[in-house]
Length: 182
Figure 1 (tube, one colour):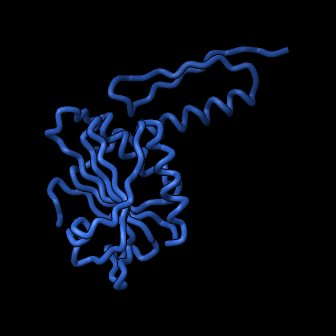
Figure 2 (cartoon, helix red, strand yellow):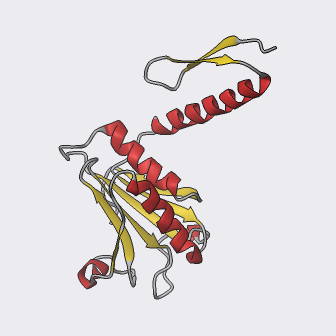
C-alpha cells in the first residue's frame, strides 16, 4: 500500500516566489523529486547570475578532447537550428594576433544577440591565451550585444550558459567585463 503526501518548496532564488509541489508515492519518488528540485534550484541560481557583455571561460580538458567538445556544443546548438563554424579564413585568424591559430570555432546567434568563439588556449607558437589556466586546453569567449533588437536578458544569458554547460567539462571564469578587453 502506498501513501501519498504533497510536498511544497518555496524557492528564494526565483524572481517571484516559486512553489514546487509534487505528490509522493514512495520514499524513492521523494528522493528522486527532491533531486529534480535541487537541479531546478541550481539552474535558477545559475540563471540569476548577471553575465557581462564580454566573458571568457576556460574549459578544463585536454587538446585531444576537441572533437568531443565540438560535438557536445553542436548537439546543444542543433536544438536551436544552429551549429558552430570552423574558420580557417586568413583575415579572421590574423585578427586574433598576437595569437597564431590554425583555426577556431564560432557561432553568432541573431535570435539572442550573442556571439561566441571556441579557441585553443595554446596557439601554434606555444603562447597561452590564459597562462594561469594551463589546465584549460580550450577557451570560450562570449559576447552579448546589449543593443541587438532580439536581446532578451534571461533568454540570452541562458543560451550562453547552456553552451558552456553543454561542453560537459568543468569550466573556470577567466574574465567577465562590460567592455572588450582586447
